[in-house]
Amino acid sequence: MLRTPSLTLMLVFALIMTGLLYVAKTQRPPLPGKLLPKSPHTVSVAADQLADALQNGPWVSPGLSGPALYSIGYRACPNCIAYERSEFEDLHKAGIDTRVIVFARREVSTAAERAVVADLACTREWPIYHRWMADVEEAYYHQYGIPPAPEGDTRRSACLEWGRIVYERVAAIMASNGWNMETPALYWQNKNGEWRFFAGDNARGKRLIRRELGVPQS
Image 1 (cartoon, rainbow, N blue to C red):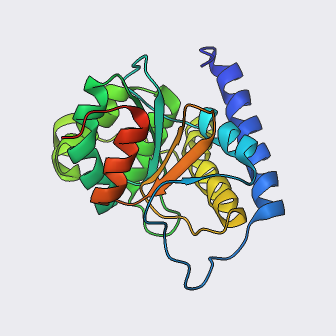
Image 2: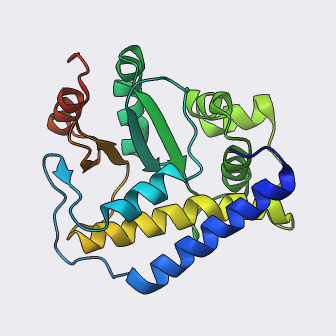
Image 3: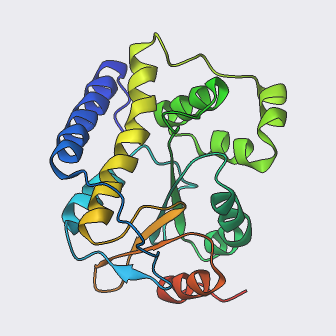
């Protein structure tokens, strides 16, 4: 991640414009009646675009040296919280670098949520995310305060939009593969370098993800 503020802002804007162009060309409506897969699947269409969206997204992670598991979700997502609380500790013990991309939903996010999401994208600081998720939102805001609002600040507004664009871009890729988007949306590469995905908090899915990543079953 570039540290010079002006270069960082230019990079964020470039990524957002690339994402907007991709979404504009490929965005599809939700697939009616399409159930989520009951087991991990391989991304067979636009896998290179998925890799670009994830790897260049505003993820935060504990910086572990093992394989990466990307998770896309929003703060109030109950399945995201459940998955993290049941899996992250064991994943980290196995060296899995959990790379979390948090986005603020356009219509229903709160001002405080948008401020923290922008702060996460701008700083890429795992401790901020960890503290935010450790308790109820209100407790975090009471103890640590609310970061400056992204509205009216060019850099922070770009950081806020960054996560949304990644979510929309990945959703378009999922539609191209015949699946609707759900959260948490989980992505990793298997031993053959193929991109794999699973969505939701499901006991069977979690067990199979652990198996593919070489994480002991709990």
